Length: 299
Image (tube, rainbow, N blue to C red):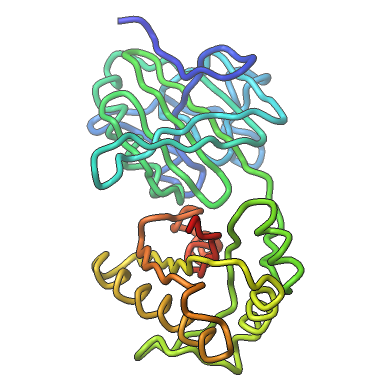
């Protein structure tokens, strides 16, 4: 079977794999029952690359005994990362754009059968969370803003690393900003509404953004909206988050009605875990996912 690579605009088909420079056993990356060949090191004990033009990618070092054959770099490349199927079994993917690095490696015959399993084992040691594993051919993983796609095919494996740029996150703070987002997108994500842990009642003194929502709705008396509530927990059952978001959406609606907005203009909707807008593995992603969204109603 020939080698298979992912497709990238303007680049050769690519993919990847690795070992991380985080601990002596990781750097040694030996396969079970295998004796590693002596590794040449510099004065600081770091391994010297076999090809100076292709030094190891620092976030995930190559497997022991593998030899680099090809490498590429690009300041701005988009890569499609396969993700695990959703609850209905539908395929999912994420397009990631940023600084790009690629390397391909040749494996000795004795190491080929264990390569995929070793990569799956080593990625968490290097700090990555595996987002998809399709044995024996591909792995997608993430660590913060760094995404890695690994493809394994017989005697070759390769990996593509994309580092997303850090973009400032600026939630809306005023009625004018809410109006701008609604005009541009038909919806706006709202952060800063505090709910009591026991019954999800609104804590008004910590929820100044509600006054801005109220100001926006009073300035647009003909507008009807859907109040969506989203929450994605890493523990507990999906049904728990569905119930919490039901209570929160109703709490926001009741608060707005109590402050003069007609109930006929408002429709609460509990979304639970259904619509994440970021990866929930990072603290920033989890913070962005837990939100109230205002959506223009079609009715």
